[in-house]
Image 1 (cartoon, rainbow, N blue to C red):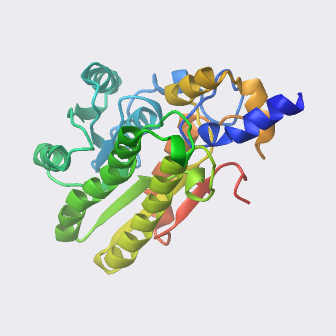
Image 2: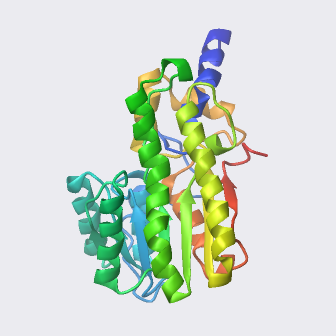
Length: 295
């Protein structure tokens, strides 16, 4: 690889390491192949049987895979997203496999829509056991002085405000129940200062801060709150990012400590672990799921 190409990859590395996606023919891993995972029939008596799971941004990527994974384990899943056609397809896929899911179209940038989404989920399913606040976007990489203010505001409104609004309306329900689990989507960018994604770095650092504050405040109420920080994960968003920058999987993967792109199925398993009884002592943690990049 030439020095020019290496400098380009490292300079734009935040885009690939933001936990947003791309297996792009990543090859064999110990994770389930995603096309296979989506065809597995739901187990009514699975390990999350009868529990109600709420997921923001589950019309594609990590959210979609996680919704399907919870449904396969017997959970009743309410999820949102802006793209109705994709949301309806995910709901249809889950129901076709014997699972229980409800797509509720809403935009996490709007607090009223988030409140209505959470309330509609509880009205339909009767309670709220687990919330995965996953919705997020990624913008064209740019340094602070060149950033479009509307892009900055949209990034913060979606990736940070959306998490805040979700917790704002999830927590009162969980407090009343005296139980609940919340997992927020952070990123390796919440631990680094990538030069060309300052808006993304800022919101992911803030998500980790929100997570720790809420976990401390609610631990005595039998509510656990954690976040996860991925590196590069196989989602359509990262593929588009690679395409925009003229990068390939083969160029990016060798720059990672674990030299491959993670799968959305791997992320789903991490979320389910944090939501399970196997993680009852884990609270206020941002879990490094970068394959060692933060070591």
